[in-house]
Length: 220
Length: 220
DNA sequence: ATACAAAGTTAGGTTAATCTAACAATATTT
DNA sequence: AAATATTGTTAGATTAACCTAACTTTGTAT
Image 1: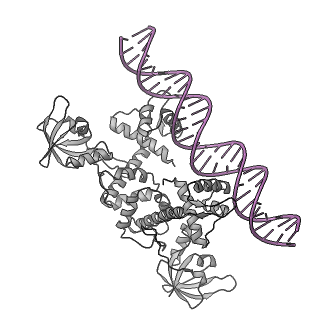
Image 2: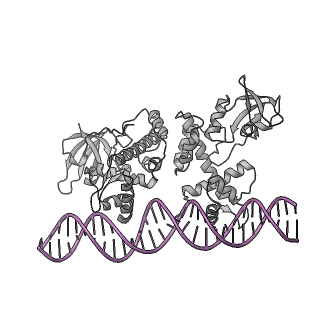
Image 3: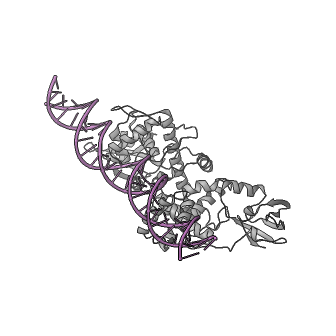
């Protein structure tokens, strides 16, 4: 099925929201704000995607991807993450620069391109932000993640991914000395505002709760 | 200046036409048919591009790119040919498959991406079809080309590029045993219909005039 | 349980890129 | 030079993706 750039973005946004919130059902306003359009616009598109059997929804109800819609959305995420990996590994892009360009590259239509790129990169399993890259069958390696904000003093954990892919956040992550697979010791937590003192490679930093909520870790 | 996908294609088409015909001035119908749209459509777009000072033209007159328009068009061709080279050299695409995908990739907006890709490919000077890749300053290595159809029996020449980039043509070129930098001996020419008997790597083939007009060569 | 707030929908309008059909200017041919 | 053909332009319509403003439905809180 040939979809427009825009239609693809709607499907991708729907999948992303369910990934991030853990909930299957999505609302019109939520979708609209994720795509930075007005609810009326999202509503129009939803009707179109329903016509095409890519979403399952009825008036005033919640939105769900159909299995076909989900398949397409996963393919887009696959392309996005493969391109990010390419930019990072082969073209020397930095962590915080890959996302923007991958947003464009993910819409290139060519099955052969995706397959060959995957091969060229030696079938990577995770992108530069630690997010899993769906394989050619659409299967995703899930590593059950907690956020840094769920850790308690004395814990040691390892950063596996970031939740927020925005440049300002990623640059801040680098500044704190953090990166994928780095070990983090939780030194203390401020009861009042939940600020956290952490140690990475011997360097201590104080980070906000908001920051800690955007770092995925696994226990050590 | 931020241009739409479509606007970029109009600029590229204008530059291509002047390249191919050798003439500076382009007509509305010619442009329209190159882009596979109706003349009325091309006319509308021309007005828009004139507003943006990218083309120079007046009612019922001929169309010219301004220097700014030409600069942008060259940049698009640069991207197109770099991507073709990438697909061919790094991703194992064949000669006749690269064009289509590069038509999409050429519109990706990221100066850094172009620069890094150029570096990654070790600053190639020619794409897989033998066409010169403009460098980062927009300079193009011109090799003064003749077509195979201009050769006479007894001549020996070397194929440097193809004029037609379509899949059917390129597949035919491969079938005849031809490739970039191959030596060609002109054995004979049929006076009646200008069919040519050529020899490549010891293999003799008979090719039509139309075919011969689409192969660029240099004298040996 | 009603009232109010939040979420979702509809109607009608805009812009970019396309079209068709009619018209105008330029070029070519006899 | 007049007739005809070619080329280019204009006017008005269409479609996709967006908008605002008004409305309806659903959910929440007193």
